[in-house]
Amino acid sequence: MKLNNKKSKVIAQVINLVLGLLFVLALLMLNKIVPTPTFMRAEYVIGILIVAFGYIAVRGWQYYELDTSGEGFTLKVKRIDWFSFLSIKEKHIDLPKYKLQNYIYNKGVFNDDLTLLINSRKSKGNTIKVKFRLSLLSDNDREKIIMELEKIISSNNQFQIDSKVA
Image 1 (cartoon, rainbow, N blue to C red):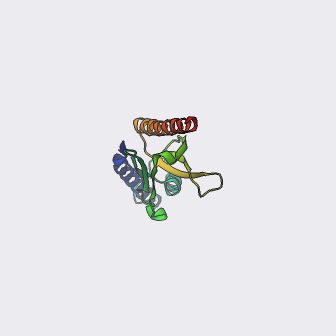
Image 2: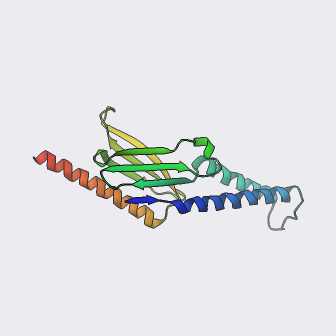
Image 3: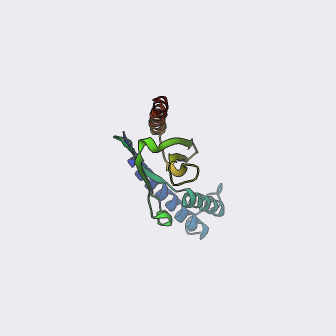
């Protein structure tokens, strides 16, 4: 199954554009070029916008591609916001499905964290944790990702049980 969030690129661009325009408007209100409405103060608006920009700089908006067709599992995650220069590299994992041992999925308000537990001979505990941050997921996409991971994990567990019996 192939899954991506191409629509999130447009949503992230619109959100960034609106925040940028609001920041410019607040600066114009602060310099008294544009009249300030009586119910709002420019300093408070700028403070809120700085917090929003800080949140986006730390967490960011992510574009992802997930491909589980065939024998491989591929996941690519890349930042798509104004602050994407902070992490230029895209996170990419491509491995056989049988190496996927388990996963941890934490749902957040704007971003979801996905941690994959992968079988490896290189580490001491034979398990490596790989963390991904996914953003702007619809409930349908979230359910598809979880369902696909559950299917892979259950088939791996069934294969391990069958190989121990034989």
